[in-house]
Length: 240
Image (cartoon, rainbow, N blue to C red; front, top):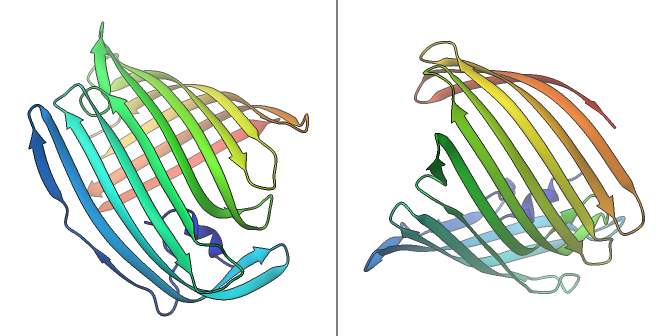
């Protein structure tokens, strides 16, 4: 399989011959209590073989221009918005406008209520990416919502609960809806070593009456010996 699926996001470009890009350092504008950070970037790809339809690859170059905006209202929350325009040299692909929007509440994405750090993260995106189900560049819309709560039991142990919802509407394919709940316990074993155990229960549904319910149990060990090195190992079991 070619690695064309990495075109789903502007900041995850595949390593293709002839790629170049220019990213701005960004600026910050203070509007009273609101601090707005903005930036712009340009990306160019050449000699890219992308799927224009199932079983067919088309050679094209890509020019993409994007903007990024993030507004922070002190420690009360933040919002971000990122529009971009993509232009292809091949007639097999139409020029595309895509954008993303999201936010969270509280400082670092959480607020503290009764000892619990609670996070609330809505998101929306309209983008074009390679889907496994369509095997070609496909326009998608995604609506997401994440709610998480974390409680610090003691200096080394924390407990968390959360839920994630996503609704995807894809061009020439079915609408997909997923919902999951999870609970975890995490423990620090030292300054640079930690472990966690997570249980997840979820479901995925499409408008073709395909339902997939699953339960998953996973464990992980994380080791960070320095600021520049990080290692993680995980093991899990899923039943559908």
